[in-house]
Length: 267
Image 1 (cartoon, rainbow, N blue to C red):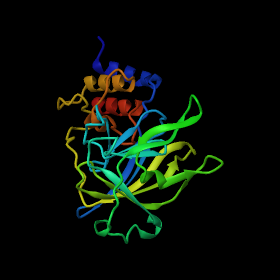
Image 2 (cartoon, rainbow, N blue to C red; image 1 turned 180 degrees about the vertical axis):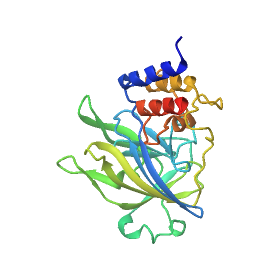
Image 3 (cartoon, one colour; image 1 turned 120 degrees about the horizontal axis):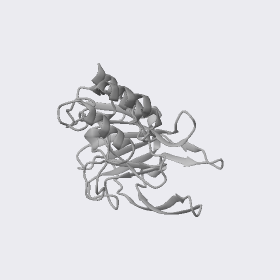
Image 4 (cartoon, helix red, strand yellow; image 1 turned 90 degrees about the horizontal axis):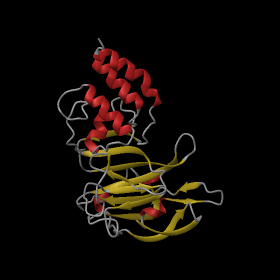
């Protein structure tokens, strides 16, 4: 007679063959009263797809229609950054920049609410690199945020650390925004690290137990199957399921999360 435990152990031994799904979001946060001050690293290395981010939840989001969705505030693709404004979305976002000062000197000193911001909405800029033609063409992003860094003759990005602010998609909150790194620990570009701060608390409607991706208030083999199917791109997860599936909280959804879930069920 084959026991469920035997099936789980067998699954655990064979899961190493599964390909990892790339999704990265490393972050820590410190909430002081209602002041959010957070550092995030996002894998934005894809040349074709944008990674959308909610400032209020400190989470990557996956809007079905970014143009009409207010779930995202800011988005990343390689060096490019856009806000939920102008040609990028129907939101009331935007960004401002002061190139006369830097966050290195003024992060703790500037009161964002007292600044006379010149808010810039997203528009078309002609500096999107085409891997096929090896030429630069048009794309939509935010011109104010575009000055966060520049490439030198050796194609290395140099960060300006200019004082930048972003409006949330509803236009209600002004957020300090400091992109300070473009490379991961292996020197690969497109892994954008930034710090942001705003007068609001993190919010999240995801209140399920870690691993319960089927959201049925139980953790069992159906959750294992679901995560495996997600890793193999057979099914897509919503934002909450992506949080639940990252069982070891390392920022990745992959075989280690499945093994962790198997161990939870066995134990």
